[in-house]
Amino acid sequence: MDMGQDGPDSAAAVESGVTTGALARRLGVSPTTLRTWDRRYGLGPAVRSAGHHRRWSEADVAAVEEMCRLTSTGLPPAQAAHLARKRQDLGEATVPRQRDERPAPSEAGLERQRRGLARAATRLDVPTVQQLLAQAVAEHGLVEAWQHVMVPVLHAIGRKWEEAGDRYVEVEHLLSWQISRTLHRGPTADAPVAAPPLVLACVPAEQHVLPLEALGAALDERGLPHRMFGAAVPVEAVAAAVRRTGPRVVVLWAQARSTASVPLARHLSDARWGVRGARGGPTVLLGGPGWAGRTVSGAQRPPTLPQALARIERLYPELSQGPAPA
Image (cartoon, rainbow, N blue to C red; front, top):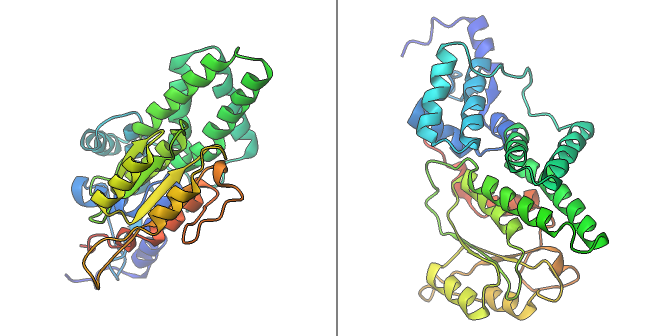
């Protein structure tokens, strides 16, 4: 292709666009997801730099932001992409923000969202709860919405429940269920990474599964395969799942110290499989406050969802191996 017709001004305009990594961080999705949307649905940068690097213009960003908004409502990716392209062609796509990165949300804005969500949950107003949760995910991305909106409201309602007896138990149950539904409707990568899965399980007797669902939704965004086994998984069942799937990572969630099983964590940390000379084993991540003060040789304890994701991503170099630029 003859590149000589592009003058300095054109080249500078291309280079001034948003990089794929910056756009992924802004939207709360993985770079792999953006590359897949580009390849599969044509939602990609209209021009590229001389080195074939993707640079996203304001119009490109608007189309992808619309795609994220539509998928967050539960629309299938193919249909969402069709509508995003159509609205962009008609000039109806979301107006892009004039920035290269998604800014950190203001504390005042987050507090308004938290108060609105808490009030709606207290009124048992399901439509408003669903709307506010979807809005938080669309605005901040799934991980940030979990960290800064969902979890604080759950904690606040939990404290009210403790202070007022059983008066708020129905509120906590309703909000937990709606958050779970929102997490399951979150954006997913269309091209899963070909890699060994993760195993996600609560320790025996542990019923608090919602944080694992948040992690599972974030893994879905990144296209990372995982097997969710949910609450209160017996020791034998966790061990059997690990033997049968050969996971690269095992995440064990314990909300309370009384449920955290150090012997189980040690057993899984020592698990090995494969032929002699090529044996493998999992990295065990201990999630939840129940592991505080507990030490398990070979296991890691990331304190937050973003830190857990960062450690998982380091163990999956396949995430950075997207399709070659056209």
